[in-house]
Image (cartoon, rainbow, N blue to C red; front, side, top):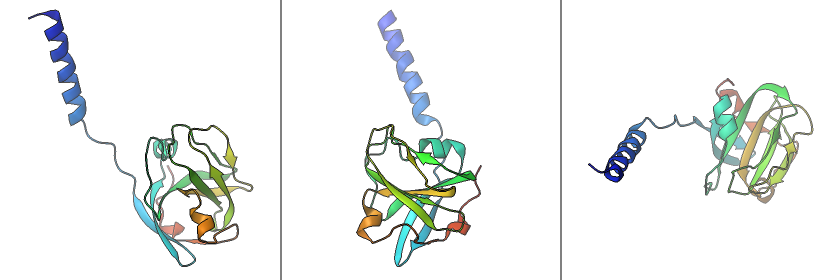
Length: 150
């Protein structure tokens, strides 16, 4: 067997092993309400899920988002490295009140930070909140059903 053929077989075997490895566990999905608007969110409640967020995705369906559940109430911030979708993020305090909403551009490292200490951040397609007249002071319902942060 030639070296080239042996190398090709080795690469094929490695690729096959990777393709058969178990997939990353999907994040839990839950329903939230803001006023009369219902949305489905993936819940990033673990450190690896919070780190991954919506990175590398090419689209986000309408009325679908990602809820970040933080381990501590603090001035959390978000950025858009490796994120292809323009997003809006709502920073939400422990009682479910939206503190501020920031628009974020893809592939940037600009920090977007809560104006007060928050427990949650909710990312949606850019403009989702504005199109529905949702702003600071609005209440997010259903957060009590979110998995605890880890």
